[in-house]
Length: 568
Image 1 (tube, rainbow, N blue to C red):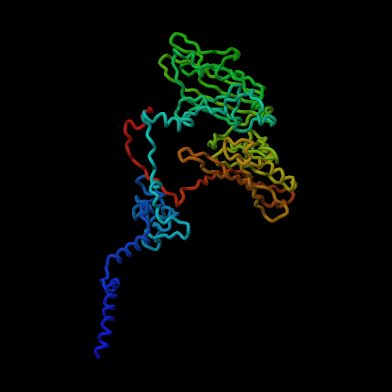
Image 2 (cartoon, rainbow, N blue to C red):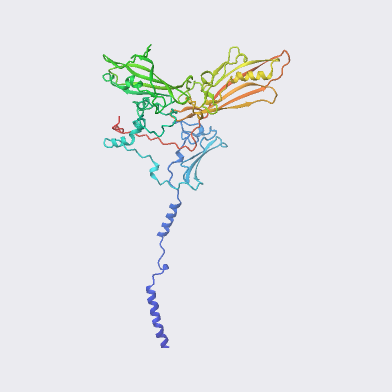
């Protein structure tokens, strides 16, 4: 029995050594709670939504009145429960922040009309964006605020001027300094003509129309564009001692350069003096009988006479884009030694040869009380102005006799913003025929040549066809064989266009509705009188602020006294 025990001893020793060499088992150590907490925190961070940038509960896009309750604005904090009970609907039922976020808060407003009295209901819910291309977290912090621009200092002023000064100070582009003698131009064989907006070229550069650029001071680097009617006013620094040497106060400065008839040509058009008006120190203006003699600035005692206060250019051109005539009308005045600056006014207008100038009704938007411009569009050409008075849209004009058959040809212009109604009376007898009577009444209501298009802006140009609105015609009639027109109504829909600070009136739709009725045959010897009416209605369809529009906060801060240094 000893032999087996001695043989098993080395095996036990070998197993003991192997156990010592093996690493401790995983179950030998007690489980730690720290890894579990770390994993839970990581999962919580992975599933939590980003912190909202905008508090939608405080955002209200329909709150327009300060410290007053806006009607039907359910998010207006100025409204009381009594005022909420008078609301009929919520203008902004849902207010959200950034619609690109994957998850965000949404403020929901509604009215409980079954309650007595009705009350407003407010809920703050989580809104999930179904799009797979959404923003989970707004972690780009630079996009969440406006970066403050670099403030000008005496050290960096030159660098900022080189970087931003060309546009701000209207430096003359090199392309305007033309070399007319340069040979072998690539476009030498092309047909040259002026096109809309192209600067009018002169023998030295371009026709200047001074205007304010950054401030109200005059800049002479503003070119006059072809067919671009402009009117500017600016301030010019002057002094009596130097008035004779300041070029901008001299008439020659505005007429001494001849205009090129077409771009890059050798044919010149001289600028003639059309008229000269002299303005006294008290503002009285006198038109000189002769404009042939130039009046140059001159110093007389403590006054400087014959300085230019205003220039009005008038350019005549052909339908091929060639300038054939140019004239300038001047307003001259005087200054005293106390004057440090004057206000100058400049204007330019264009007229096509063998045509009459068309008056504008605004620049650019329509002005209330001015005529609505209208015309026709022959295919392949620009808009042709209407042949009626002043190229206007017109309606029937009431007369003292109120006789429709005698009122034919009497028209009243449609004035922008003015709702008008006019009419006459038609005496019908048994001897009248249906068709001739219907055509006569149609001419009375619409006129002999009713236009097809209306200018969307008060200064719409004839060559800008897309800037004109077609007139839509509707016909309301009865089922009968003989119909005569009894009413003609024009509805003009317009909207506010551009900046909220200075909105411009723009016409977007014009609808003309003709209403006819059945002409019943009268017995012999009987008469009947019916009213014929014509009307114009203007409707403002400007859209209010969109529900998703985010109102930017107002920052009330006081700037330091040297904030704009070194500028004054």
